[in-house]
Length: 589
Image: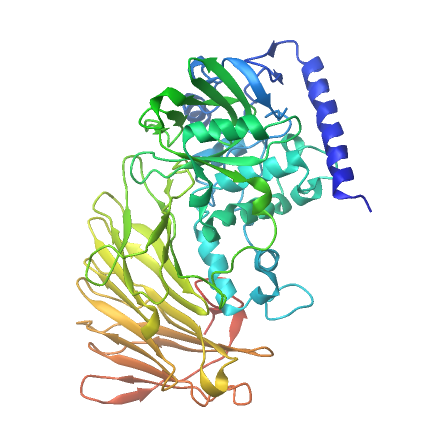
């Protein structure tokens, strides 16, 4: 079996040979500075593509050659040899919906047979977090309830794009820290490797690194970034993902691959980058070290959406070693987790629209010790990506969602994880001009949802039991509950009494579906109660004190009205498919 060093040497020889063949076969060679690459030629459009779509794509500028203003200039002082037409991927940063604009470009011009990509699977969760993500140690991973919730949280954050994962994967392949088989290739470099689920899963694992690691430790001033690249860029070594920040509010950041450094004189530098929004071309991040790392010390122009002005990154940067993206990562759903990880799924927005998401304490004031991790994903797919947050352990908080800047309904989900505890508000279909609030109180095992316009949310909690059932995890979901405008509902998990209780101040008759799952080392059992229409002001309780692996149907539940009348729930156990919608199984009555 070849060693990593031997694999890396083979990959480098292949890359050099292909670079030479590409250069020889192309008459027009451009050398913007020191790194040679074949002249950029716009790919041929699919002849079956609608003419209007082709013209919209060509008019976007995403397939144009790099303008002189954003091409690297100056004296080459450090380079890796990374060639975007060999070592980059031959498609644009993609989202999780075929309607995304870059996805249409990929289909029409780059022959990507586009469909929703395969992101993280259960086996990827095992690669990232070890066997603690699975209920089994042998065979394909069967995810724990907590790991499945985390997987859906991570994948939901990739709806807007995968720039961080694409940049990191290309760097790893170039360095030889990751082998070509990881992208489904035996010998072809990335630019000539066909799209596959093997490739997109690797990209997704690298993308998820930013969701479980604080990137603040990698943040540098622009001058520090220049000095680091001087020291670390070398032939056959492109060791970093470059993250650029400080775009307009709500616009996110971007992750690209630094491949060379140029000295323009008088304290000015260009970082040559491969940007995964511009396959096959080299672009430049401008650095002015004389600006004392203040305004104007860094600038980089990023594509946003068709018809929208480009976003200008102009703040600090981060250089994340791509090798750190590999291997086992900090686990947000394990006992060792530090704080509560909070995520809001990306939302689809039109040009000029924004949705605001923030975290405050129960008193509406900032949460002491709150860490916010900027979204490293530009809004180039008609999607808006939100930051992720880490709230200090056991501190209660509110996630505030405002659609005052939106003109159409958006759909999202809020997930919070602290160790074995997970709280989810999903299926949040939020109307324009609405203010919706998700309140999580980890110590009280409680989640509350309130809306000024009304919606049909799903509330869920996952946690491990105390006492005699300490090795048992319970998941309780109240699915698609009708909630009127100005009303709220709360789901509490009370392990002291082995109960889950849903309460609401709903003014009208509601409708509710209930799903409960019990999991231990040997058993997973799901029961559901379907299509109940409780009266206004109802409470719903589930008693799992007698529900064990030995007594798989001993789950009690009831509806209570404000006058104290009770109606027992009737449980069923037909499970069609495991963990494919929402937090838990898909149920078919």
